[in-house]
Image 1: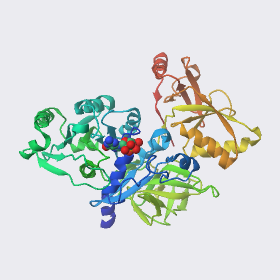
Image 2 (image 1 turned 180 degrees about the vertical axis):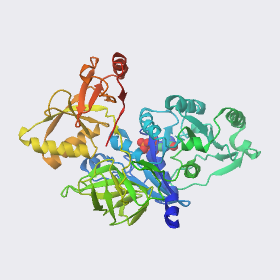
Image 3 (image 1 turned 120 degrees about the vertical axis):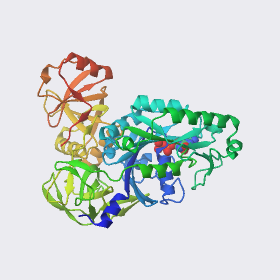
Image 4 (image 1 turned 60 degrees about the vertical axis):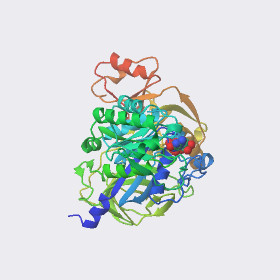
Length: 533
Ligand code: GDP
């Protein structure tokens, strides 16, 4: 039976990722969470391409040069009795498979949407991964202090494009210069927006009951009338709040606010922490593993290489799924078939990396990796040696043929490119019908091409040239044993390739070709996610 302290520690953990399209305000919202969590005193001190040159993980030159973060990191802070872990998912051109994989380590997601834009491309991609995992998704509609789309339209957009029901928890009154505040539906009160808020410090918001006559004076006739109308409409028409539906990922609670001015951030954080889940049980070869009942177990979701060039060491980031981690403890590396000592775990506290002595289910730790771990590996204390379900391979969207400049360095090249692929930064493929000579790399974000080139040169002393290929869509063949892969009828923009295990895949330049090929080949089953392990 688990002890009381362990149960307490695990139950206060909330581990989530923030997903959004670039510029929607993810960094700003993260900063504000930390501000309210007391982890930083002044907003603006967390990483960010505009605010600071140095990212939390500026270990690589390429990151320093551009002032961006290539790898995702974890931020931990305490708030109101909760221990909060925010998994940072890189956006912009540094968007990569790591961004997707980070979602595999989260128990819920916060989706930030720019109120003037609605649902955007990158949000859709990340959303799909959350749906695959059935984790709860919370929506924060940001930038209400700017001109915004009609709130009903924004909800329709979420429902239609993403296919999830919405339940507004609060409702905006005006927007932009006319932004008056938000109405909290359950509490039946209005939080008033004051334009003077500059967002540097926590703010006290003024709250007025919707039945208080003073409200009229605060927001004016027109807005009061519109609000009364909206309240009636919402109470009659929108989906009922149902926590079970939220936790199953079928219903997203929606909040409106403005991260920059701190408006609505604290309310959001409080409701969110209350509604979101404690560390979830995870499925393994031995069935579901209860976070509090089982001894320490974790799985690797990210490998960060060469923090120190001289040593070529790596850090394996793991999500603890059950029990407690103690520095220096021994555990089974299931896939490697060996007992190992877990040492040098690091963790991010706000913007500093520090050594962790103990950690609990829900937490993320970075463990020194002498080159033995792969993405998806399980580490467990128990002698049952169960393995957690693998992490899928996410579809790359950019492809290039790799030409190696100096054929004398073939060995280093193969070693380097394989190691980089093993860390999960790139995927490597070959022509379907030829040998090892030609290598095709696929990446989720184009920056990974630069990372590949840079690392091969700096760490393996190998020069390469990348020739871009026009393909953007990749599909794994789900049932290669049921069909004759050699006889697939393709389209002019389709190409057959195979991964290193010999599994056949199809790549396409146009999305409509995918459907065309499905139509032309009866019985063919294609998947957007590759199976791993
Ligand atoms: P990210 O790319 O999603 O991390 O977005 P950032 O947090 O870096 O924000 C992008 C830009 O939008 C920055 O210039 C922010 O200052 C601005 N921004 C973020 N939140 C708000 C907001 O609530 N209102 C306004 N007006 N601007 C915002």
